[in-house]
Length: 230
Image (cartoon, rainbow, N blue to C red; front, side):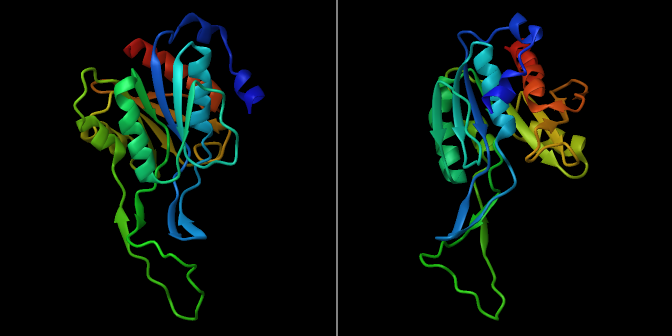
Protein backbone atom coordinates (compact mmCIF):
# COMPACT_ATOMS: atom_id res chain seq x y z
CA UNK A 1 0.00 0.00 0.00
CA UNK A 2 2.80 2.42 0.86
CA UNK A 3 4.46 1.86 -2.50
CA UNK A 4 1.14 2.36 -4.27
CA UNK A 5 0.51 5.69 -2.51
CA UNK A 6 4.11 6.87 -2.79
CA UNK A 7 3.91 6.63 -6.57
CA UNK A 8 1.41 9.49 -6.47
CA UNK A 9 4.05 12.08 -5.59
CA UNK A 10 4.23 14.81 -8.17
CA UNK A 11 5.79 18.21 -8.70
CA UNK A 12 2.35 19.71 -8.23
CA UNK A 13 2.04 18.16 -4.78
CA UNK A 14 5.31 19.82 -3.71
CA UNK A 15 4.21 23.31 -4.77
CA UNK A 16 1.53 23.56 -2.10
CA UNK A 17 1.73 22.83 1.58
CA UNK A 18 -0.41 21.82 4.56
CA UNK A 19 2.38 22.59 7.02
CA UNK A 20 0.94 23.73 10.31
CA UNK A 21 -2.54 22.45 9.44
CA UNK A 22 -4.33 19.68 11.33
CA UNK A 23 -6.30 17.38 9.05
CA UNK A 24 -8.94 14.95 10.33
CA UNK A 25 -9.79 12.21 7.83
CA UNK A 26 -12.27 9.36 8.17
CA UNK A 27 -12.06 6.21 6.06
CA UNK A 28 -13.56 2.79 5.51
CA UNK A 29 -16.91 1.26 6.45
CA UNK A 30 -18.63 0.80 9.77
CA UNK A 31 -20.16 -2.40 11.10
CA UNK A 32 -23.47 -2.68 12.91
CA UNK A 33 -23.77 -6.03 14.70
CA UNK A 34 -26.93 -8.08 14.29
CA UNK A 35 -25.67 -10.87 16.55
CA UNK A 36 -22.17 -11.94 17.62
CA UNK A 37 -21.30 -13.27 14.14
CA UNK A 38 -23.29 -11.13 11.67
CA UNK A 39 -23.31 -7.44 10.89
CA UNK A 40 -24.58 -4.78 8.49
CA UNK A 41 -21.87 -3.04 6.48
CA UNK A 42 -20.95 -2.00 2.93
CA UNK A 43 -18.25 -2.48 0.29
CA UNK A 44 -16.03 0.44 1.29
CA UNK A 45 -12.34 -0.57 1.23
CA UNK A 46 -10.94 2.56 2.87
CA UNK A 47 -8.63 3.18 -0.11
CA UNK A 48 -9.88 6.70 -0.87
CA UNK A 49 -9.54 7.88 2.72
CA UNK A 50 -6.14 6.23 3.06
CA UNK A 51 -4.93 7.87 -0.15
CA UNK A 52 -6.07 11.26 1.14
CA UNK A 53 -4.27 10.67 4.44
CA UNK A 54 -1.05 9.70 2.67
CA UNK A 55 -1.22 12.73 0.38
CA UNK A 56 -1.91 15.06 3.32
CA UNK A 57 1.13 13.69 5.16
CA UNK A 58 3.27 14.25 2.05
CA UNK A 59 2.07 17.86 1.95
CA UNK A 60 3.20 18.42 5.54
CA UNK A 61 -0.13 18.19 7.33
CA UNK A 62 -0.62 16.73 10.81
CA UNK A 63 -3.08 13.94 10.08
CA UNK A 64 -5.49 12.15 12.38
CA UNK A 65 -7.07 9.17 10.64
CA UNK A 66 -10.26 7.59 11.97
CA UNK A 67 -10.63 4.23 10.27
CA UNK A 68 -13.31 1.60 10.22
CA UNK A 69 -12.45 -2.10 9.73
CA UNK A 70 -10.60 -2.72 6.44
CA UNK A 71 -8.54 -5.52 4.89
CA UNK A 72 -5.61 -3.21 4.06
CA UNK A 73 -3.09 -1.56 6.34
CA UNK A 74 -3.57 2.19 6.91
CA UNK A 75 -0.79 4.62 5.99
CA UNK A 76 1.53 6.02 8.65
CA UNK A 77 -0.17 9.09 10.09
CA UNK A 78 0.33 11.18 13.22
CA UNK A 79 -2.69 9.70 15.00
CA UNK A 80 -4.71 6.60 14.12
CA UNK A 81 -8.09 5.90 15.73
CA UNK A 82 -9.76 2.57 14.97
CA UNK A 83 -13.56 2.30 15.19
CA UNK A 84 -16.21 -0.29 14.39
CA UNK A 85 -19.67 1.28 14.57
CA UNK A 86 -21.20 4.49 13.27
CA UNK A 87 -21.75 5.67 16.84
CA UNK A 88 -18.05 5.15 17.55
CA UNK A 89 -17.17 7.07 14.37
CA UNK A 90 -19.45 9.93 15.39
CA UNK A 91 -17.96 10.11 18.90
CA UNK A 92 -14.41 10.08 17.54
CA UNK A 93 -15.12 12.88 15.06
CA UNK A 94 -16.97 14.93 17.69
CA UNK A 95 -13.98 14.61 20.04
CA UNK A 96 -11.41 15.59 17.40
CA UNK A 97 -13.36 18.28 15.51
CA UNK A 98 -12.27 21.13 17.78
CA UNK A 99 -8.61 20.28 17.17
CA UNK A 100 -8.59 20.29 13.36
CA UNK A 101 -8.48 22.82 10.53
CA UNK A 102 -10.04 20.45 7.99
CA UNK A 103 -12.41 17.48 8.29
CA UNK A 104 -12.54 15.15 5.29
CA UNK A 105 -15.36 12.68 5.79
CA UNK A 106 -14.36 9.91 3.36
CA UNK A 107 -15.75 7.08 5.51
CA UNK A 108 -18.90 5.21 4.48
CA UNK A 109 -20.88 4.81 7.70
CA UNK A 110 -23.91 2.56 7.77
CA UNK A 111 -27.17 4.52 7.56
CA UNK A 112 -29.08 2.01 9.67
CA UNK A 113 -28.40 -0.38 12.55
CA UNK A 114 -30.45 -3.19 14.11
CA UNK A 115 -32.89 -1.86 16.68
CA UNK A 116 -31.87 -4.80 18.87
CA UNK A 117 -28.58 -6.70 18.87
CA UNK A 118 -28.99 -10.37 19.74
CA UNK A 119 -26.66 -11.71 22.42
CA UNK A 120 -26.54 -15.15 20.83
CA UNK A 121 -26.23 -16.30 17.22
CA UNK A 122 -29.57 -16.34 15.42
CA UNK A 123 -30.28 -19.90 14.37
CA UNK A 124 -31.35 -20.67 10.82
CA UNK A 125 -34.87 -22.01 10.49
CA UNK A 126 -37.33 -22.61 7.67
CA UNK A 127 -39.20 -19.46 8.67
CA UNK A 128 -38.51 -15.99 7.30
CA UNK A 129 -36.67 -13.52 9.52
CA UNK A 130 -37.58 -9.86 9.92
CA UNK A 131 -34.97 -7.36 11.02
CA UNK A 132 -36.02 -4.04 12.54
CA UNK A 133 -33.65 -1.20 11.74
CA UNK A 134 -33.21 2.29 13.14
CA UNK A 135 -31.19 5.20 11.71
CA UNK A 136 -27.63 5.86 12.80
CA UNK A 137 -26.42 9.41 13.52
CA UNK A 138 -26.10 11.70 10.47
CA UNK A 139 -22.53 12.58 11.40
CA UNK A 140 -21.90 15.51 9.06
CA UNK A 141 -25.27 17.09 9.82
CA UNK A 142 -24.70 16.79 13.56
CA UNK A 143 -21.10 17.99 13.38
CA UNK A 144 -22.09 21.10 11.42
CA UNK A 145 -24.37 22.08 14.33
CA UNK A 146 -21.61 21.98 16.94
CA UNK A 147 -20.53 25.29 18.39
CA UNK A 148 -16.76 25.67 18.09
CA UNK A 149 -14.52 28.73 18.41
CA UNK A 150 -13.07 28.07 14.98
CA UNK A 151 -15.18 26.18 12.45
CA UNK A 152 -13.01 23.83 10.37
CA UNK A 153 -13.34 23.35 6.63
CA UNK A 154 -15.76 20.43 6.29
CA UNK A 155 -15.59 18.15 3.24
CA UNK A 156 -18.14 15.42 2.62
CA UNK A 157 -18.43 12.52 0.18
CA UNK A 158 -21.61 11.36 -1.55
CA UNK A 159 -22.03 8.05 -3.33
CA UNK A 160 -24.99 8.16 -5.69
CA UNK A 161 -26.49 5.73 -8.19
CA UNK A 162 -28.87 8.25 -9.79
CA UNK A 163 -29.41 12.03 -9.94
CA UNK A 164 -25.88 12.44 -8.62
CA UNK A 165 -25.38 16.20 -9.00
CA UNK A 166 -28.82 17.10 -7.64
CA UNK A 167 -28.53 14.77 -4.65
CA UNK A 168 -24.99 15.93 -3.85
CA UNK A 169 -26.00 19.60 -4.00
CA UNK A 170 -28.87 18.86 -1.64
CA UNK A 171 -26.48 17.23 0.86
CA UNK A 172 -24.03 20.11 0.50
CA UNK A 173 -26.71 22.59 1.55
CA UNK A 174 -28.50 20.50 4.19
CA UNK A 175 -25.25 19.59 5.96
CA UNK A 176 -23.68 23.04 5.62
CA UNK A 177 -20.53 21.72 3.93
CA UNK A 178 -17.71 23.67 2.31
CA UNK A 179 -17.33 21.03 -0.41
CA UNK A 180 -18.75 17.65 -1.34
CA UNK A 181 -17.12 14.99 -3.49
CA UNK A 182 -19.57 13.07 -5.65
CA UNK A 183 -18.81 9.43 -6.39
CA UNK A 184 -20.90 7.44 -8.83
CA UNK A 185 -20.81 3.68 -9.15
CA UNK A 186 -19.34 2.02 -12.23
CA UNK A 187 -16.28 0.20 -13.51
CA UNK A 188 -13.09 1.60 -11.98
CA UNK A 189 -15.01 3.88 -9.61
CA UNK A 190 -15.75 4.09 -5.91
CA UNK A 191 -15.79 0.95 -3.75
CA UNK A 192 -12.82 -1.44 -3.67
CA UNK A 193 -11.14 0.02 -6.79
CA UNK A 194 -7.68 1.62 -6.94
CA UNK A 195 -9.11 4.24 -9.30
CA UNK A 196 -11.98 6.68 -9.06
CA UNK A 197 -13.81 9.39 -10.96
CA UNK A 198 -15.31 12.19 -8.91
CA UNK A 199 -17.07 15.52 -9.25
CA UNK A 200 -16.20 18.38 -6.90
CA UNK A 201 -19.17 20.50 -5.83
CA UNK A 202 -18.83 23.77 -3.90
CA UNK A 203 -21.40 26.43 -2.97
CA UNK A 204 -22.14 28.94 -5.76
CA UNK A 205 -19.64 27.28 -8.12
CA UNK A 206 -20.02 25.05 -11.15
CA UNK A 207 -19.36 21.34 -10.51
CA UNK A 208 -15.81 20.33 -11.39
CA UNK A 209 -15.54 16.86 -12.89
CA UNK A 210 -12.18 15.14 -12.47
CA UNK A 211 -11.17 12.47 -14.96
CA UNK A 212 -10.85 8.80 -14.04
CA UNK A 213 -7.51 8.45 -12.27
CA UNK A 214 -5.84 6.64 -9.40
CA UNK A 215 -7.21 7.46 -5.98
CA UNK A 216 -3.73 8.64 -5.05
CA UNK A 217 -3.62 11.22 -7.86
CA UNK A 218 -7.20 12.30 -7.22
CA UNK A 219 -6.29 12.86 -3.57
CA UNK A 220 -3.53 15.28 -4.56
CA UNK A 221 -5.97 17.21 -6.78
CA UNK A 222 -8.58 17.37 -4.03
CA UNK A 223 -6.05 18.60 -1.48
CA UNK A 224 -4.93 21.30 -3.92
CA UNK A 225 -8.51 22.60 -3.90
CA UNK A 226 -8.74 22.34 -0.10
CA UNK A 227 -5.50 24.30 0.30
CA UNK A 228 -6.96 27.03 -1.90
CA UNK A 229 -10.02 27.16 0.39
CA UNK A 230 -7.74 27.43 3.43
